[in-house]
Image 1 (cartoon, one colour):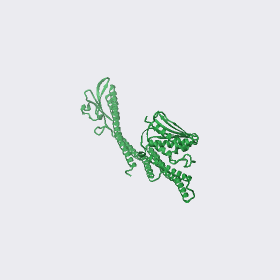
Image 2: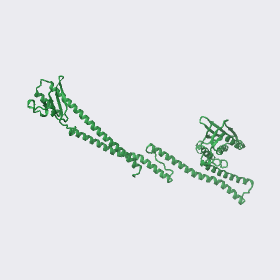
Image 3: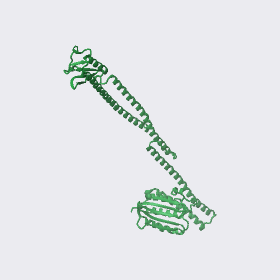
Image 4: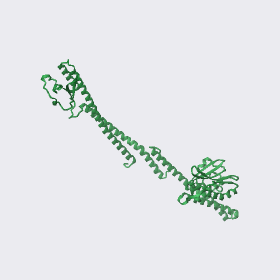
Length: 461
């Protein structure tokens, strides 16, 4: 468990969240403290300014007697919770609200240096444009040695800090559940993919991974499912190939056995006609074994392919001259078309010759007497490709059968017997040989109009 993807991802996400919350909490706490103290100081300065303005207004009114003025100062000091000390031009104390019971001559004169240095602030009193006196305003509820803030403000700051801590704790718990949710959303699809891979390894080729989770996991699941489908298809084709080979071999072997037993038992005479039928079955068996051998070689590219520069015109002309008599013997018109310039490609001379010949033999089997087969060599200069085209005007291939015509032992025309339909490996060999030489195979066909097969190679010119 502790080594699982879910646990590691969960711890990583939660630790990152906790670290981010811790740093954010520290920064927020310091920022709030600094801003709060700045706000209190600004408010305190504004209060002092208001007190100074009020004291100035008291002394501007010369008509007021000293007793009334002192009473106003004492009331102002009590309402603002400050100590107000008024000085004359000789910096002697005129009135101190802290000792408001003393005034005039009965109050001892105090020098300015006797004032408390804590939280004091002295401002000039400007009356009628003349600096007559000065005033010191000292907050009574603030002591710098104990901290600038009042007990109420300190309590408010403490409660604010506790609220930040509580919010951080709640966020930490929420990040715990969020990290678990994200870890599950990523870890569960990976686990399901692992289970699917285990089942596939154990032989359950029908198993597919669910497409859930992040986009990358979905793409990984799609790739896994494509791989599983490919393995399932390959396994099916492998089984089908074994069945088809055994079936294809059984027919000529059974026929040969029947002829030989009939010769042995005297049921059939071993005359020329019966021996020719026996030789045909041997030829069929020989063709099949040769095709299977060629197909096996084509699948091992490093052993079957000898790539070299060769002229496509030369190979096409050679195949044309070899196949022409066979087609003409069946009263099939055979046309050959090639460009004048050389078409140099990189390929295997023997495999290319065999591939073109197989396509022509396939066209011959599907074209009746009086039909036409055409071999064309084309140069696609815009894309630098060389194309070998083999077309016929036979019955064509149904659209629903086109995707399967290159499969081994597949015959598009189910009515054809193995005597006239070949081994069913010809087009498979053409595909394997062409791709082994770095080319591609394409086919176009319409029912009643014929078919066209194309071998496409990269042209070196």
